[in-house]
Length: 575
Ligand code: GLN
Image (cartoon, rainbow, N blue to C red):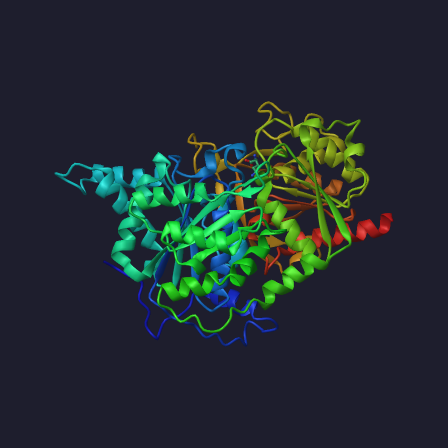
């Protein structure tokens, strides 16, 4: 059995060293002296019961935040029981936003929470699906790795799950690996994962721990909280051989201490290890709520690690303080087609919130369904907003509404931020209505357009598979000196994440620049246009990349900050 092991000569990876230093208020990164606590890698499993959507991702992220703030190195991974290789091919209505990691993995949206809470980048290794597990086992079988053996769920699939659980721990970069198991206990699909957890707990002893998140419903008619579903869910877990160490009860109403003691007694859990997770005004409050109930201390104690002292949450608290005290509003419209499900634009929502909080403003987001927008009604929907975001997306549905929105905000000089498809729509609208290129379009929407100002990237032309084949992950972008975007970032080279197949058509660059839309961000290797802006407008910027994937509580994305500042100024001008 291989375990993470630390020597005194251990060096912390740069990203962590930086994030840790930046968390210590007022410290210059270069002068920062870091002290690291080293423990043998510990594995924390987070399972869920009763219903889905209880917030396992938020509990995992909150625990990670607390352990990080105590000086430990922590990563979180998500194991999803579905058969898709990754969520990249899922409709956002099915599974919310598809998040993208720096190394180009299309990932579950919980990885976005992990990064926003921990300020630490995740990679492909942080998100595994049943599809990936089976693919890997089947590849091994074809290679002959199991020659002579019958390949079975136990031990082959479970061993592959266990191997994946330990990949990050074995890098030596982390003291704690938190593994969130998707789905709920009792699902057929989750069974191999729970069996792997059972085996790992047996093998790792005190270095493994299980936190189980369940639901305590409040029955309005009876005016009562009910713990029976929790008891049943723990029984299910016990049936597969897992005794949870800690229970987190998600609830809308305070669960009295005596009721928590009853749960502890029925479920073989220590009374202080039954913690409640009340609905919070913001998800960023949850680490504090968990700390108040000593979740971090209980975890450390149970895993045989010194739990003395307090986590340094000063920077986190400073953010929460700003979030709760901001009274002046900034009102942003988000134009997209998935507006019925806000999880579809999770990272954009959070990035706007980080930036607004940074600027001491209370964020109000209005979701505008692009399918409903026409040239006639655009003003009705958009006037009164301080800034407008044109959302990313795919396909024809709702696209014309985005053009109407952009025309209106451009002509009325409202701060406008186009992201990926949003940027492409800004380009198309400008071509049609300013450059006079009628029927200009993206070949994604119209293969026969006479003006393919947005066109399929050359390297995409030979690709037929849909999964994992877009231009994905982080690429460098050079910013033009004097541009608003360079000013926003305060640097001339940035690296941001991507997820697209189409690009600005180089043949039209000159016409756009002459017409007033500047290509101010380009990829240094390929010259691909990454950022467009209209300098004469208040703030009119489109990015081919997705800056929302790199905004965290402790580091809001500079472009979102710049956009919010422009929106705040525009609000002042209007009033
Ligand atoms: N559909 C566009 C493309 O593939 C934009 C993608 C996006 O918005 N993520 O290029």
